[in-house]
Length: 260
Image (cartoon, rainbow, N blue to C red; front, side, top):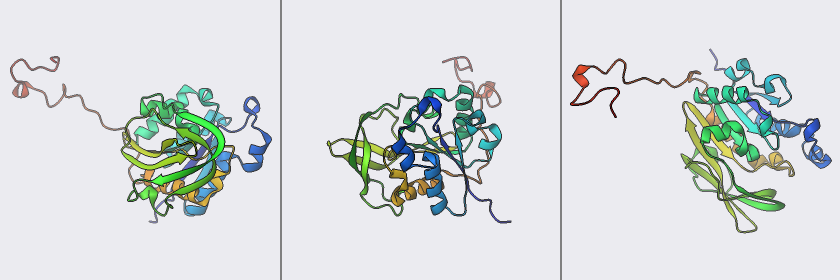
């Protein structure tokens, strides 16, 4: 039987009445941030099934059934992080631990689910003056860096700078530098449970970053790396050593399941 296509879901908080975006953002991204990101993925992953969802959809477009058939979720947020329901955060968190890939983009670093997965504030320094960003590859052998120029030049971008309050990554792939001398760890990977996570910072709503072919290639590489379609979706097995293996033959002097 032929393999099933990769199933990708691009999530964006979207534009709604309380968070009306300036008109020029609509000119840059007429189909929304999610539409531009999805279009880039379709270009670089033509065999994949790419869908989109927004905050205003029923259950934010992140129903149990939809997540169960999603191999990789991409998350872009900006100002509506607090509007994401806790039950949806619980659901996405559970699916990541069970094996769904997650790409967290730009200001998605403040997304509730990313903060929960990281266990930190995920705060950083920032300044928005439309500065040039140089994205330097510091791990050229990683699959996400394949085919990416070094440096990758983003002509205009919001500055993100250190300190970035996240745990030590499993892989540091990209470091960015800006006109003011700031540097930022802009491409990081993590594993949580059975799930793979890639954080990538370039992609502010004020600039056409997601229309850049090189940025689209990074996201496509990230999706390929994070996807585990043959793994099966199940929570990591956890056993209690006080049950099963523990008996008197394993107990040393003074050892018992309740001793510490």
